[in-house]
Image (cartoon, rainbow, N blue to C red; front, side, top):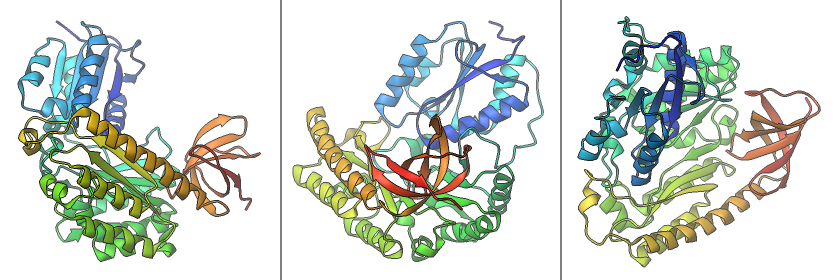
Length: 430
């Protein structure tokens, strides 16, 4: 079938994590520069799907979505799902209208899409800059990809490949470029962010240097998920109160389990005491910092006692928010063939218990900020003179302002009331 287009309309759909969303934004930016129109699904001549395979549910959602698409429309499946090596994957991508682009090829996805649709070769030697204008209110910048840890439940390490790190100078230039495009906050992202290491520059050294550049250009830095094993003393001290205007007072540290037995089976390379010490040391640097986490329930061999250990660590850690997942078997991982798999009812029961704790901890954390000043990035307009945004502490905030506020704008507010997972605030006049 000849898919050559007269009008280059393409729809981009994203499954999965923030890293995938960032990569879809980059793909959109590059396709626009090649002459494509990024459109709705109904208006599109072709579809690009950035895939996720972190759980079985992720695979199911993708397959259900594909069933709804037009059978004669070219579909480019990109990323993690098509990077798996299994029979299910092979059967799916045999369809004549599906073009797989693996993670190894993802950097050249725009070139591959162009050449398949336009039937013309293009020179792809010039790469786009690390920073590019994005639709959201804060700029995401990917500084690392790949993972060599291989947790026993995780398929992503197998499909994303080995560690890849950008040159630090690229990041410093990207911060300057983002500032010139009026971004007031930058989110540093990667698959295993804390593992960053480029020649003699460690992750904590990179962040320390990036903070100096950010302070120079008036941009706030936010870090995405960092594994516990990468928190050295230098990194912890960077979250000190005096740095709040430069480094957002929020950090995401995946716990996964509070049971030392389960952590060992997961190949997580730390124990619950190590994790708790990191959390407490961060709170010592900044008592108002928000810490979020990932927690998995129902891992093979998880007893009631193991789950109680997890519950207790979560309660002691005073998290702002927990992302709670039920363990999902992934073929190709060590946990797939482990004995004593936990039933879905038990997983659900434990997830509900943690969700109840999550709501309680979240309310306590939000209320602790009432009467305090917050710096927020405006993200959306919700009505006449009504705006919503996110504070440095990762709190959702709504405010009424007589002056017109714009997305990406950084504004200072005072928290007045907590109402259903959001802070109602008053703008502070300068």
